[in-house]
Length: 425
Ligand code: IMP
Image 1 (cartoon, rainbow, N blue to C red):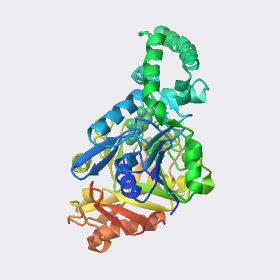
Image 2 (cartoon, rainbow, N blue to C red):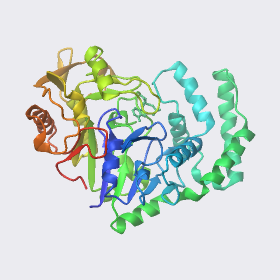
Image 3 (tube, helix red, strand yellow):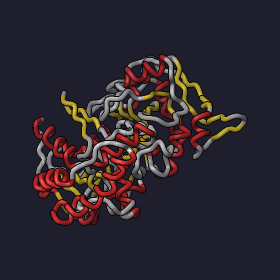
Image 4 (tube, helix red, strand yellow):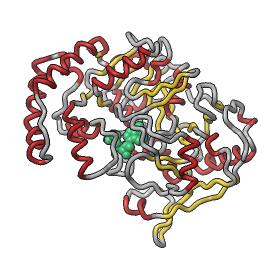
């Protein structure tokens, strides 16, 4: 036991919410360390479906401590709405939620600036203000959660930021400016409601680790959306990889014991950007419908394609996965044949490693291995030996290619629809 990180190995939406929920039972703390309410983690408990955006998925269990770490960018309006929605469904939120003092706040102008920027250069973002908030953080102009506790500091920072923001809105984007007083009074209301959750998260997390508690670090988005290691500029603005835990939660690399990569049995992506194995035909449509591939946050249809092991190998290298979880295997149940990408061809050149050049990724042709399908129902199977022979071969192919153990196999949305080959913690 100890610490475990759950990291998306593709372009997000790998089904991390389900895996986090499954492992939370054995954990004491669940910590988010990057991203914000751009995430949409779907968890099904009994007949109830929950979509979590900012609050760690551990909140659905009683007596688990959930921490929003400093690397997260926090929209207080979105958080309060999420708290209310969960409370309406009977979820208890009280002394089980903590927010790091040094989290950066998403401000109304971040959302407006992003909407305007998207009109000019489309990244296909979730328009939650994530990028502009991280921009301010890096530019040392950000406003942090702790500032909510000091009204005069909060007011002066809003005033200083609005000077530039309003100039840009008026003169560059030619749109309406924002009012300082409105924002200030709105954020003071948020401060009152959120005050009780605000703490020194790094101290709490490190103390818990030192006391031998089990901690789960819940990644959002996926490795290929990482600001450094993803398909830049078609990425999110945070470090989604395991390394992000160290800075985004204040934890030493020495203290991360297990790193579980979550790999969907095929590939999806939302928003713009290269996607070598994308299927723009009826197979892609089939995967979208069978897999319910619509954004949990924005409702946008996801682009779908075959499993890309070149991309996953890149994720494995950057994250150092100690094991992987395969999700949504059951979505592939009806195929006669399956394709898996093992390389790319661009002109005369063959690539076995994920290229950094966006132009190569845009123009390359995937090199596929073809594997036989199993044409049998795997949904809900909990015993590895009960999987059809060809499903096991598909999984062995992935393991042999990546040289890492598949520890978990998810065979449906419900908590217990999972095969445990080796417990990742
Ligand atoms: P942003 O994170 O809203 O800035 O969006 C940047 C890119 O990341 C866009 O392509 C989004 O569709 C994608 N993205 C952000 N969050 C998620 C997620 O939770 N799942 C999948 N894609 C995401």
